[in-house]
Image (cartoon, rainbow, N blue to C red):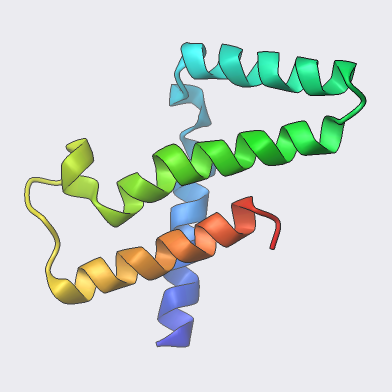
Length: 99
């Protein structure tokens, strides 16, 4: 089970990384503005953490946990799959939070 979970998390992470070309320009501009503002205030590390936390907490993890709500699948996943997706989202969120 642990090996399967690790592989699933790695696959999810690689899918996220590989989809960066489809990242919306509007969000890219907003996050760039956040980062510039943090750099101007001498808080570069906080800017990067804020962007990661926001992106994963508000967009990516909810889509992983409930793909049908984001039109990624037709039906809601069964209980076992939903549990796996929740665990994957938790792992990905922890990585995004640098914890």
